[in-house]
Amino acid sequence: MTLTLQTDGVVFSPRHQPLQVGPQTRLIAVTRIESQKMTGQRAALNIAQKEKIIALVLKTLELKNVSAIQIDFDAATSEREFYRALLQDLRRQLPDNVSLSMTALASFCLGDRWLRDLPVDEAVPMIFRMGADDRAIKNSLAAGNDFREPLCRHSYGIAIDEPLEMKFETSRRLYLFANHPWSERDLASIPLGFQN
Image 1 (spheres, rainbow, N blue to C red):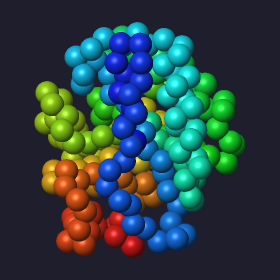
Image 2 (cartoon, rainbow, N blue to C red; image 1 turned 45 degrees about the vertical axis):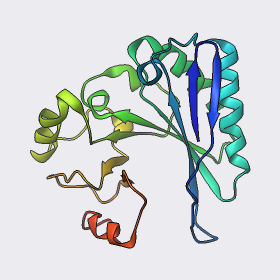
Image 3 (cartoon, rainbow, N blue to C red; image 1 turned 90 degrees about the horizontal axis):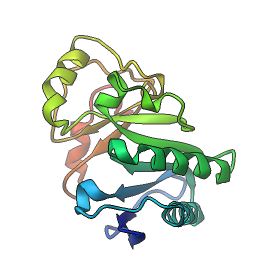
Image 4 (cartoon, helix red, strand yellow; image 1 turned 180 degrees about the vertical axis):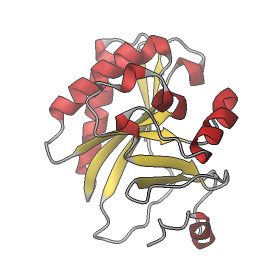
């Protein structure tokens, strides 16, 4: 689902594409949060908005076979304290057996220390569409360097239409993103070592 912060409210948009998986597949319920960077409307970032987001995220636990929650929010610097408080309150309300994941700009994982004490099990470095930092980050990873932030050393987030020249640690989880509906042919784009 997508939650959009608009002034002092939260607009809910459900998932529109059907999800077809095996009955035993463990799922990660992903919530995308969009704010002023995407909407152009300055959000109040108030307690009511935070509580509304948490209530909607917790409702995703009612879906079958959900074992983890992931928040996808490209928070601007001015939104970080709101985001931190949201994650802290959400973590307190999640069952102990449900892990909490977040996406992170790759630049956050290389040098920005604000992720350090967030109450999440992983921060997924999004290694695609990185804007001005794109070439420097990809060159660093291709040279064998790793992310400085420990939370970012559990997984990778990559786009199947943006190949990477780097050695993947196959012990890490791989999140794949596509800008079109998935097909069997897309599976051939998965880096070797992750296809089993």
